[in-house]
Amino acid sequence: MRAIVQEEPGGPEVLGLAEVERPEPGLLEILVRVHAAGVNPTDWKARARGSSMTGVALPRPGFDVSGVVEAVGPGVTLYEPGDEVFGMPRFPHPAGAYAEYVTAPARHFARKPAGIDHVHAAALPLAALTAWQGLVDTARVRAGQRVLVHAAAGGVGHLAVQIAKARGAYVIGTASEAKHEFVRGLGADEVVDYTKVDFADVVRDVDVVLDAVGGDYGLRSLRTLRDGGVLVSFLSPVGDDVLAAAGKRGIRAGWTLVETDHAGMKEIAVLVEEGRLRAEIDSVFPLEEAAKAHERGETGRTTGKIVLTVAG
Image 1 (spheres, one colour):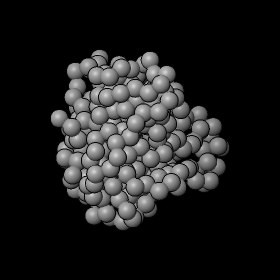
Image 2 (cartoon, one colour):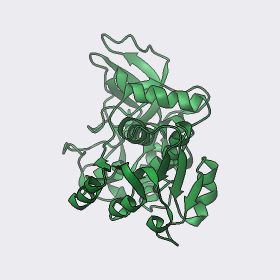
Image 3 (cartoon, rainbow, N blue to C red):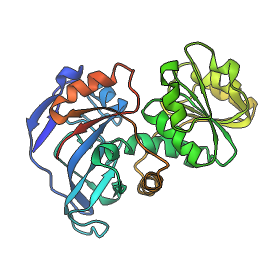
């Protein structure tokens, strides 16, 4: 089968197309013919260091998958050949999603939402699960709460805005002025241009902050939160200075790393089928142009998600 491989750490140029052996599904695994693969920041970060977050060498990148079940391994009753599925298999361990086929445990996937194509489905798993787990599992967002979403036009952010609205929250997003119309179209009640004002000076009394930016955003975000609120960081562990300041006000602050989640994927599929969640596609590249997809992503100017097409 065709797959994108890399033999050493480096820039996008280390990604190349090669013929590799097609995997076979093991016990409780399925073999999926990949139709599309999502591209995420964790992909190019792993490419640059040459290993996954677990330190395992990463000869084949990619985590997000949408495709069709080709075969099932022993013990699998959840799916059968021909079923359309999407998921984030094996994360944070290497999944090798930039390929024509992948194998993984059956419950690392969910049934692809009806009514969307594989490109839009492949854009969802990692980013949507990150938003879902941050908002629902960690912050326990409920109707009537005020939620601040940083980088609201980004891969995680634009899905977080929609999920928060679906939970009944009042949503404030930060984005550059050129992306305000897009963010409002997602359902945001307010949008703040972080390039012109300090969001911490104009946003107040929020219950939950989702920080997908990092740096000093965590400490500054505390100024926007009510006492007893929740600060969720997606990029890195929260610093001791933030934890100390948060603790004095009863604010729960922490870092969450996305997990493979069959139940969460099913909830995301329901939101999609109900028309309350959609992935914005920034750009689409064929499998053999994975390097160009990474170049696009590393510009930091994308709106929504980048996707690779693999099979028709």
